Image 1 (cartoon, rainbow, N blue to C red):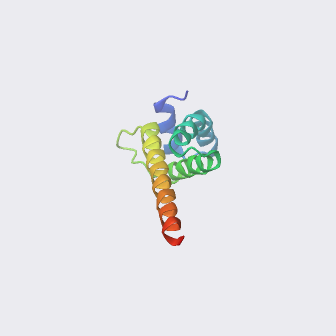
Image 2 (image 1 turned 120 degrees about the vertical axis):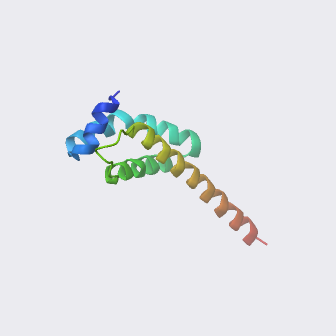
Image 3 (image 1 turned 60 degrees about the horizontal axis):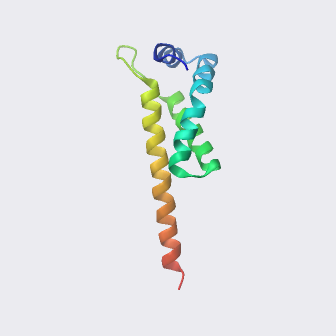
Length: 99
């Protein structure tokens, strides 16, 4: 597992190799976490990639202490629950449309 200090350094440098290391060290855990919520493999993969893309685009302030893993899990949680809510809304609309 990558240390939080190393992950903060990877985010601050915006070096692709550092981010790749961060991605590889955390992807499986994020994927499993999301899969546990959404229950579909392909959707969990898509949401995990979206979470890492948001992390890559996030601009953390260098003068504040950050915990990128915590931030990543929070984003993953929000994405997963949003996907579940969207799926449930879609099902309700389809059921209402069937006479």
